[in-house]
Image 1 (spheres, rainbow over the protein chains, first blue to last red):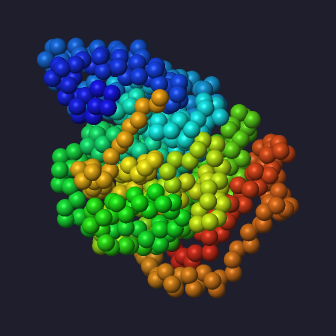
Image 2: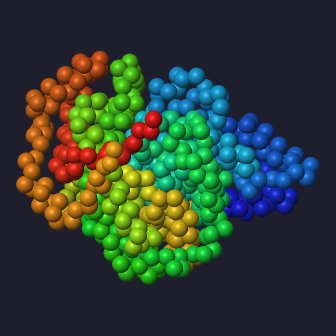
Image 3: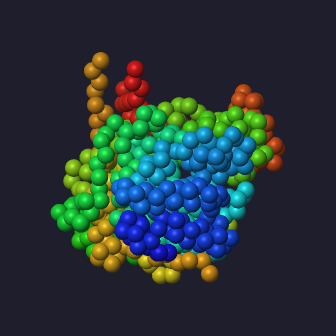
Length: 461
Length: 88
């Protein structure tokens, strides 16, 4: 069952071919065996997982209906509240918080569908990170090459799914923190529309950009998990009052009839060869000949940068006053810089955001899908500080998210689809109009069927 | 209140206007202006900054202000509404 899909596990548990307890035990054994190398998990809730699994097996033995995710083990980035654990959010400081009294909404919804939480996952401190490195817990390690970054900030989420520890994980994405680790680890990731999935009882970063979403080894697994997590939640004021719009049943429609374009201009600059190959493979498979210009994408990234710095600084101001020496220095120095950004720039960035949104939405009158690179390159080495872009040595960390920031800036739904380029995978962003996650998932599923996109999980040696 | 919609402008025109508009005076890296801003901000917000952190804070602020200058030079109508809209 190590590489089994979410639907295969649920089917096996539902039919009695295996038990939820056996599946949970197997996942816990894999974590015990491999987490020393991958450093994906920061907390394992074995007792809770076994109790939950036993309850599912009991329900089956009594003839009660099981959920669509019956017995599926999953884990969450450690900024999700897990009852009984402090929500560390990658930090040292938050470990001193009281333990969470209640699970995050998305954990409750996955467990209501039968999934079994097995633990919490490593992440960059306070999600201000694209690398997956963490000075307190150590770096998450890429299962494809343990010396490489997982990407961040949901580094443990990408590593746990790619490494075969769990088939499903949750992460958060403010500027790219689902899409970047999906790219570096070679798994599928979904960043839904802003406001689609409840963020209740998760630790925030930039309220106006924060999204939550799943990682999995196939588009259909993403869809299964996404479908059961949808729905309004009054505990998150941003969560849209929209009914659930299931996507799983739509996947078989594939990409037929969809108008697909490739993002040009800004999104063609600074690509490493592997990123160019990935985009070309996807565009060719989908017959996408049109190139489309997302207007002012560079400025959109700049505006996202400014808002992130200011909102992040405001969030952490009191911790910066009282416990500045307990931060990761790289995070602390950025946050302190963010405290003195002129308010006029932040307001202008939010005004520009509305202008940009209107312009980009106009594009979706002409196309249904925009393809864009997820990262400029495949996974860099852990600790790497610079890379060479177009012959110029550039700082690595802030530039990993150059292609993700202009998309999440206006909350568009995106599937990061992994393309198995050698020697390391890299993802392509499949971007759709707001509330059209179904379209992005259909395209990702079609690419799998065409043999172009595939997760290539590789357990650590 | 009736609001005029923010008009979309051709990219070329926008760039042309941006060139004619004096760029905001962004403090330059590596010198006193930014250090003074950081120090004054820290004092006003009750932050204690170790002197050894200053170089990296200045670097980070320089990059952020460069991004901010790019945003500030983009011309928007006076009644352009920020993205988050408050509902009473």
